[in-house]
Length: 125
Image (spheres, rainbow, N blue to C red):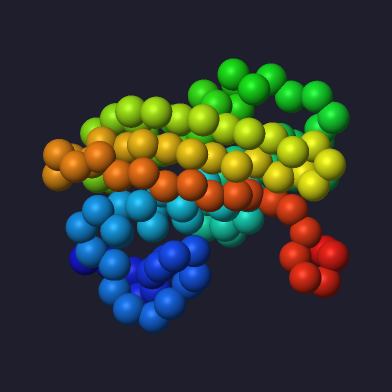
């Protein structure tokens, strides 16, 4: 058991996530983290922006390389046995990446999740 917050229906709420929910939350946290964002480990995270040259900042990207980076981050998450399915969809105009995944947990269950990384918030930032 860990975490003092959990994602429910795409919203962050108070509570404690356990079991497969905890693992999915760990995956989401790992995928949302920008490289060098966490001061205790600046190598942690994915290069989503990296001064306009990262995955979402570049005009061109190698989809297979990005998929491999995402798959690796998921597999490095405690509680994950393997990635069953991974699909990514990039929207260059909105600078977003949608990630659909089916993950086999160490518990034996297969969990699906979809998340969108990037884009503008309400303030256009």
